Image (cartoon, rainbow, N blue to C red):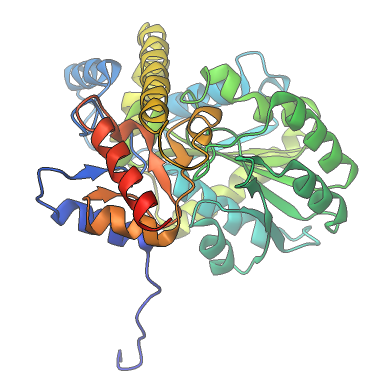
Length: 399
């Protein structure tokens, strides 16, 4: 039966995490996998999450299945956090929201749904590079054709906006563009609000379908600020899909808590979209995990919401402080380290070669992927100078 099964392609992030976890050196610094870490380099549990767990334990809802499409209270609050309380599309019933296996599951379900849409005249998905490594395989898995274009200019450490606009204008009508709403993974380079305005206009004129992924809402700016592109496209009347995750902004990584939102032209279409998504969920995984969505619902639907906002402010402040400290520590090292300050969120792509990144791992026990992406939250007062010294060493050795 299995004699002809081939090995799967190597997953660099899987290998990176495995190697970091197995490294017992006291000098180890893990700047790899994208989770928000505390000042000791470990998982950070937010205060609101601890309180939500206490409340949930008191309520003790048991372990029954949720609805196939997810916890209704959670979905309502998640949609409000993404689209805004007074969103006309929400009030008109044009937004279909279903719970998913975190952000990855939302992306997969969105791709699967779009691939099956009978009215779709295009099966082409445009993905800017560099980007999150799962977009291409999950789209290919459901039969969508992936076209790549350059999103990021490493020379200026900014979005290659002219290439993005040119790609939009030359793409066939009804093509799908996957765009990250904020805190771009892996570069940390985001569009400005005025660039989003220009892009949204260009996409509408070219009849391009927006596929918006927002996994870090609240870690770049406020929840409202980071949702700007989603609310912009919605106000323009665009049909689109939006993938939402509560892994990073609420610390629910292992609970796999996410949402797929589909914005339709009218409520009648939205009801059909809901039924199709219900079927796809039922056929594939029946229902999503309940624990994380129950906790998120407690946070978003209670007086904990204000505390959540304050904790996100503190997390953003610490990320900014870490950026400034690393940038300062690299002042005497050759290279364009301004990228550390001009990007935002968890990530920045350092101007390092694959060989330099390999040497950081094998010689200095500093773990990052070959593209130079670092998780800013992995830095702290006890390791930032050591990381900077290691970077200086590999830069000088391979200059």
